[in-house]
Amino acid sequence: MIDLTTHFGTVTFANPVLTASGTFGYAGEFAELTDLDKLGGVVTKGISPRPRFGNPTPRMCETACGMINSIGLENVGVDAFLSDKLPLLKRIGAKCIVNFFGETFDEYVECAARLDEGNRAAGGGIDALEMNISCPNVKKGGVEFGTDPVVAGQLVRACRGATQLPLWVKLTPNVTDIVALARAVADAGADGLSVINTITAMGIDVRTRRPRIGTVFGGLSGPAIKPIALRMVYQVARAGIGLPICGIGGIRTAEDAAEFLVAGATAVQVGTHNFTDPDAAARMVDELAALCAELGVSRVADLVGTLDVSG
Image: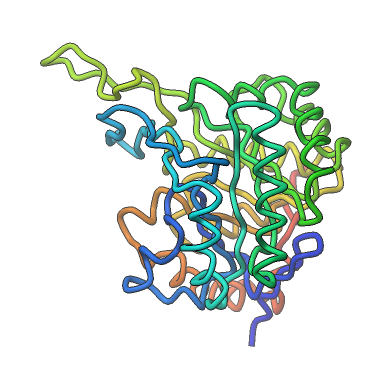
């Protein structure tokens, strides 16, 4: 029997396979398509203090090995999340990580505080918060706060004081030095890092000579960004910052997930692949156990940070 138990800071997961924010709704949308209880965790769609309707269409287009999206963080808002979505998330076996954001410093702090308060009022159900300072598809907030280490640190420090829940920070790859950013949010009180969000990109329809995305630019995800995500996970892990890392970027198979663990991630999130195979993340749990057996590893934790870069 392979031990898939994963300790990510103070949160213990049954296994290291989570679903990524924005690709799995609030879990209920996938309830008839996969076994939610098998997942290590679900990271919800990003939540803002009030409901948002997102960007104009078209919002998504396929690329040769991935997709570009510019949804604009459409969501139901804190109140509807707590009343309508959290009850199901409490009933399933997977841990619940709530991704959140705001357009201003005050909105970020308000959102963290209201989710914390709502969680206590509900008797629990939220296991951690994931701060989104990396979405490239909104005019205010998101990556606006995530590319400057000083600003990112100030925002994390402000939200740290607003919640008792573990606070993860989702980092953008659209920076020159992701280690500097990781170190800044760690020093400000973050409990974990999610690495990485999407990469700013665009597509063009040559027949209409118009961009394929309504906002012109969107976020590239899927297999195309996996090598970049692996590199950044390894860079952050190697820097010895001391926070657990959740690896994200083009993960489709158990072998992909294992690569991120070997690079230094403690857990992984499956994102774009959920759109083409809604059962992929749950199936990956069994496949990861089989891969560990094949590799002669009895505990999945023994894979973490084992990359050998010696000559």
